[in-house]
Length: 144
Image 1 (cartoon, rainbow, N blue to C red):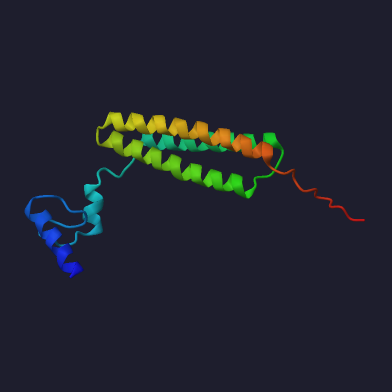
Image 2: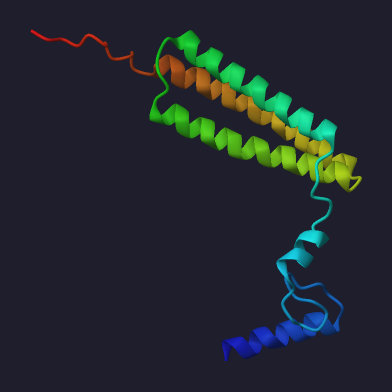
């Protein structure tokens, strides 16, 4: 019964000309290649690639400097925060690239603004975690 309802919704969507994700105008599943082509230009221009690489190197340098300044090793919280930051920031860079490739400057500007806000939030939180991290364990140990 549930599948019949889904099939009816698909048929109505196709008949009314609405694009239903993953289905062509006859209600048949599209190939992944077709879906990827509809997503827009996938190739990054050389300047976009350079911008991403420059961002990656600058951010890695800032992270290393923040950790070295605290003179404490990265703990699990700092690693988790860093992983989340990379996931969010690289997604925002991709949104910016896709918006530029499809001539949507307003969306590209929002992505740039969101990336700046994410960087500010991340480095403030990283500094707080570095200050509150426990001191590094002694390499010599406390043998008696």
